[in-house]
Length: 219
Image (cartoon, rainbow, N blue to C red; front, side, top):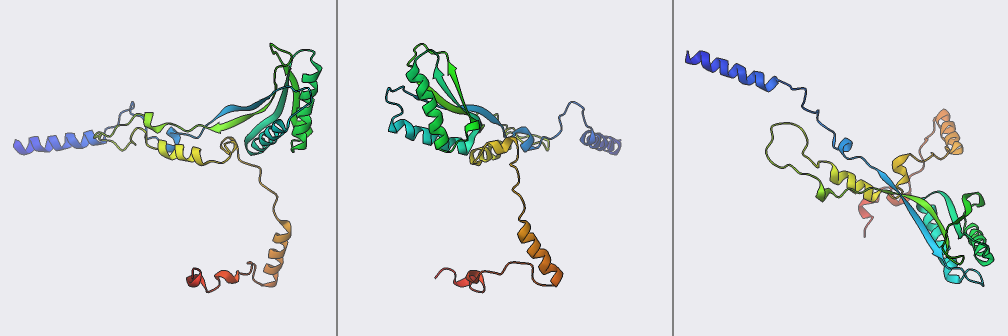
């Protein structure tokens, strides 16, 4: 009888180990739980209206704005003048447009518009849309370090990896879509194929700097 009870107990334990329930979620890949995301932003400066036009400081601020636009700008550069009939403010808005073009922004990428301002001499605005990577604050994520009897990942697993990737990406626009590939070097490809047909070496010549002198690179 005792042997029969032990045998039944062992069979029950084995059955419990193989039993699956439909309400248990499947294991989640850490990269699926925490995915790279971007959020929109705005980079804009305000330029005071002067009777004698843009100042040297304002020209420098516009050049810095153009540099930031080249690194991470999205869409058009928008120049907004205060609404009203102030000719000085209107003239300065077009001076801002010309300064942006002189700094390297194509004319078809600059839009001049107006905005509702309480004063006709309100500042002229210049800016563009940006995107920035969302870096998750992993310290606020739930953690479960207690004992558990499953092969599922811990809560928060993968957060640090995704946060580090988001913080290191130079251009967050690469998260949304890949960049357009540059054209292939057809001239170099023709040289390689010609050498291949002739039975010659297709690889480039090795630099003498590392040719047999690696051990003596640092002296």
